[in-house]
Each structure stands twice: as structure tokens, then as C-alpha cells.
Length: 208
Image (cartoon, rainbow, N blue to C red; front, side, top):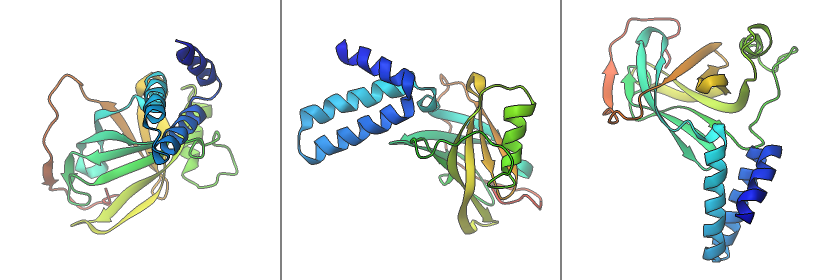
């Protein structure tokens, strides 16, 4: 109970930094073979994740991938990294491949977007944050995967994960100025199988 009270107090100050610190302590105890202490810190990490909205997005989501139409993806966590993997593939990035990832550590958290922008694509985030009255938008550094048809020359490009109010997610592919908006799929439904690439016509945005 004392640990939970202390955690709640620190969580209100900086939940992302608290989780990062707890994970570092957990790894340190594990390296020193202090497994009981490592297990305690693992419980603390789990408790922090349960209280932080940044770590409550795991599961299956649907998003509109330009000319490819709606596709399904699965969000998982690897430590403080959020990883989105395609369930529905297309001719550019097939099923089973990472579509984007984001750094949820304190180092990955971004300040509000404002001119002069670090990247022209950030102007899109500025519109949401300051001009549409949506409210607080948390943003984290990320990488999005793009490729030519046939999964040729795949590469990770700079991007930003956007956490909108009311559990809405977005990922901004900065070089293309393309905002991917995600909608959560019913968590009670069985997970869909990986699907093969779907056919689509040519497009200037045909990279995902």
C-alpha cells in the first residue's frame, strides 16, 4: 500500500519519467541477480502502465492507408517503445511488418508544435493543437515504414505519434505530411489473421 501511494504521488508529477526510472531499476536488479527486487520493480512498472494512458493502447486498430483503404494493425509495447505491426498487408508494406513505432520515454516526448517548425510536416500537428480546439495532444518521436511496391527499398522515415483526447491515435509520416488516424477495434472480437497484400491502383502516396 505504501509503494502504491508513493507511486501515485510521483505519477502525478511525471508518469513517463517514473516509468523509465522504474524500468532502469528493474534491469539493474536483474543484472545483479537480485531477482526479488527486480520482480518488485516489474510490478511497479506494470502499475504505472496501468495508470498511464500512453500505455493503454495495446490491441487491434483500424486505419485508412490512402489508396489501399482500411487496414488492421496491432499495437504492442517493447519496454517504453510502442510498436504497430500490420495485420492487413498491402503491395507496399505487407502483413507482419512494422508500420510505425514510437519512443514513449521522457526523451521521446515532444514539446508543442510551433513555428519555426523543426520539420514542415509539424504544421499539421500545430493545426490540431492550437487551431481546432481539440485540446491537449501528446506527441512522441517515432519512425514510420514506407516502401515501393513489392516491399522494395523499405525504410524508416521520421514520424510522430499523436495521442488525442478520448483515446484517438494518430501517426504523422513527416516527409509525406500524411496523418494516419487510428480507430480501436472491438477488443472482445477474436484477433484477425494476417492477410496477404491487397491490390491497389497507382498513387503518388503509394508507399505504405
